[in-house]
Length: 286
Image 1 (cartoon, rainbow, N blue to C red):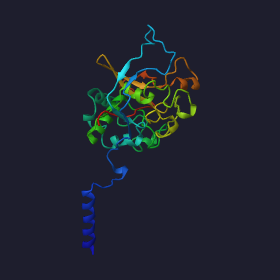
Image 2: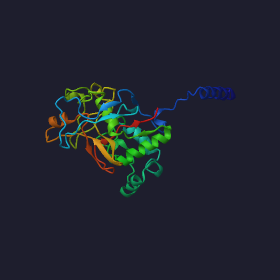
Image 3: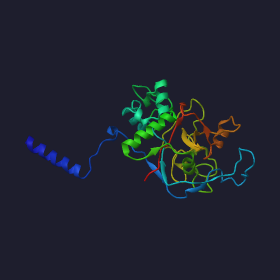
Image 4: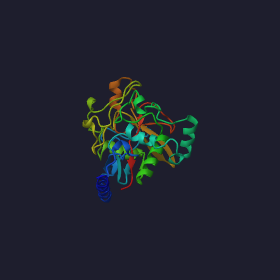
């Protein structure tokens, strides 16, 4: 009887293997491929507030002409990168393998003893994070170097080219095709279409929350929740940016929210780690 059972199990395994139908529970997989949105049309667009009919370029640097950008087709995360996705990198030894890191990034990691995101602990990982303590909330408190290493790790695991989005890729995904949108959902401010984590003690929310605030192409939370890292190359020098809560001369929550548009951004250093700084992954292959 035992031999018969073993024979049946063997036959079932062969059948599963031959049809590539083996199911591995999500919690045991060594990586999670992100859900992506294809941006493969309307790739020539105005890189600025073209929704604003009153915008008139001036000689001052803060009102430049709006450049016209043409991108190659790409894919960008439907959601911000989650704790669960990033934890796979941690468990797989991503903080211990220098091959995933840039030379500068590895030096910083060693000097600062980075072994986890800023608010995680070694025992419970993201569950220790007071701001983002569910697996489907965004990872945050990481530097550009860590996000870069994660992308390199995922690229090796999948044999696909994942990276932090350029500022141009991010803006196109956030504002949509010309004439673009001031906010991901349209040109009218809607207080309940985004999660505005403005102050230091504000908590984050689930990456799939606020479906009403989706962008033209279907990306969630392009405004609100975490500040999202991007990069911008100018004159062969790399500028690292976070698409952030530009507030002008604002000090009130209401004013700050309204100033968060699909082109708002501010600079950040590559090594900077702080609450509510995360990212959305990008892929530039087919």
